Length: 127
Image (cartoon, rainbow, N blue to C red):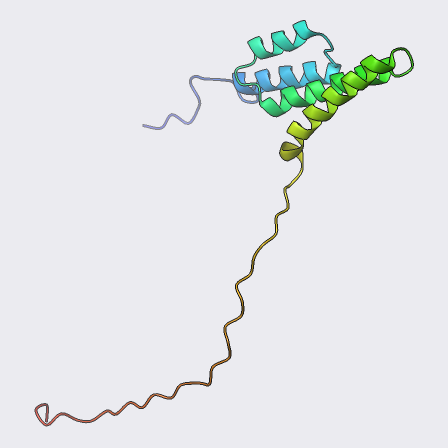
């Protein structure tokens, strides 16, 4: 029996929990949470935090630290640059396609066309 109007559930245009959670995580990552506590909060608060998001955060963080220490402490800057490089290597497959060589089978040798002869005759039993 159709009533013609909705009687329950979310009101039209209201976002579900998963969408709200995804938007909250994206907003926190865009704000630039730069402390370990912020990452722990993201991981604890998220229903599913993707590895590529964590990798991307640490690439940005290590790169920022390497730039900060570039003029102050060369050894620390190099250490953070290497950490940023390692994290970027792990993140690269998620952001860029992987190209691979494709082996093609050799072309089939050209063969002359085959001729078939089909003989159709009437059977004496059918007549």
